[in-house]
Amino acid sequence: MKKSDFNFTLPNELIAQHPLPERSQSRLLKLDKHTGQTTDLQFKDLLNELNSGDLLVFNNTKVIPARLLAQKTTGGKIEVFIERVLNAHQAKALLKSNKSVKLGSAIMFDGQAELLVTAKQGMFYLVETTGDKTLSELMSAYGHMPLPPYITREADHDDDQRYQTVYADDEQAGAVAAPTAGLHFDDEILSAIQAKGVESVFVTLHVGAGTFQPVKTEDLELHQMHKEWLSVNQTVCDAVKRTQANGGRVIAVGTTAVRCLETASSEGPIQAFEGDTEIFIYPGYEFKCIDALITNFHLPESTLVMLVSAMAGRENILAAYQHAIDQHYRFFSYGDAMLIG
Image 1 (cartoon, rainbow, N blue to C red):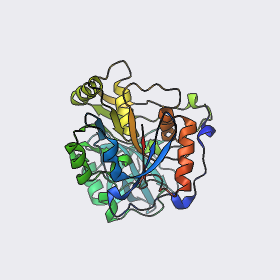
Image 2 (cartoon, one colour; image 1 turned 120 degrees about the horizontal axis):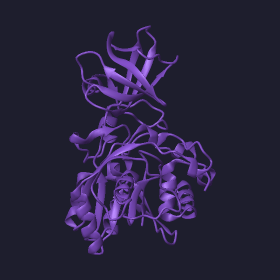
Image 3 (cartoon, helix red, strand yellow; image 1 turned 90 degrees about the horizontal axis):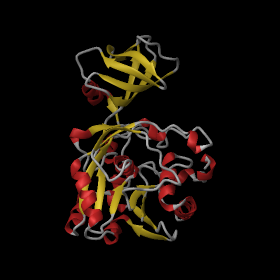
Image 4 (tube, rainbow, N blue to C red; image 1 turned 180 degrees about the vertical axis):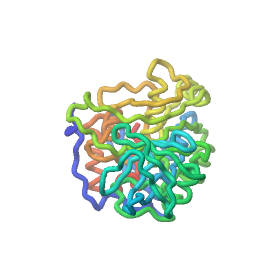
């Protein structure tokens, strides 16, 4: 298949620039993956679409304040975008400045050298702390929420809370983009889901900046996916097997949860997995684990619109997206949701 097969025209005014006042106020477009039929719902209607015995799989990663504004020793501005924290003092990062960054350069915060550029790996630089602060302390002091590039405003205080799921785990901090399908869930909906007899489990995938990188090859088979770190523990595996044995549905909340479950199922029945994944899911892929998916609307020609097309069919997805455009759904990270099943 070709990249251009997944193109569509989206009016800019449908790209949500702010979250709604309440998480669960979003709309929900239900798509039957077999027939292509769509139904317009509200996100709170999700409860009626779930059955006792179903399993919801959430990604509990926590977004870090990965965007840091700093200065070079010459006084010029430089933006440090942490891609992956390697340890308390080292990270892979994207560096943005007017001139190319030289290895050995110091990066200054409030007039003090805090980071040193030590190496380059492809599009990323390796940086390490030079002062007393850890990377976490630097981000706490100088970092901003890393809003996606299609949100054209600066991050504000509200984003610190709203660009984070309510179930994000402090012990699982490491994402530089939110698992946005989870942004629609509030404590009230989560409690109602539990009361209905729907089980919930948590995987972890630290979403990387690569999720926003465009597909650069027209032939999808030539595309190289970015790496993302994930963890699927034995509790998740047991819940998936139990759900399948009892005839329930495994429902992924977000494409990141899909990547976790399908990676852990790549060699047969699901098994615990921890490490990097480069899984690329596009039409022709046979799902091994999940039955349904809750997700947001994705960018044209992106790997994520290809993933949902693998589940529901390219024609069904593009038709559903056109319906969403015609009905003025809100798109992307702070936008509305889909239920594909």
